[in-house]
Image (cartoon, rainbow, N blue to C red; front, side):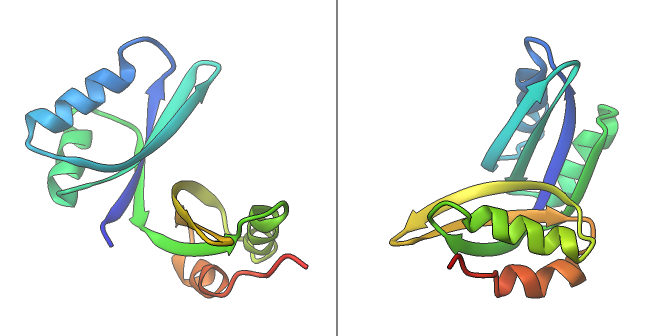
Length: 132
């Protein structure tokens, strides 16, 4: 799977448009997208069609960002599913930079995570604790 990027944005009108236009202008297609904002700052989290060009555009425009391996996980699609997974990562000392919702299938929900320590996160995300 492609890299996942988390980009800090000013929480003001046009911030998302400016970033999306800069990427589009370089021929980069946005694939999976999420984000939000609160207070002075917001963020956009996404995957693209071209990691190298994305990285170059972000650097050229002086965006503050992190990138990392997109790690997939499925959790129980009921109350407590995400809570158990987030707690297991926290207890292992793993910081979640961001996550993207992928979809729901049956009683499972799929997410793509970007974490500060993929090696610690991988076994937890591959075998998340079940909600009892």
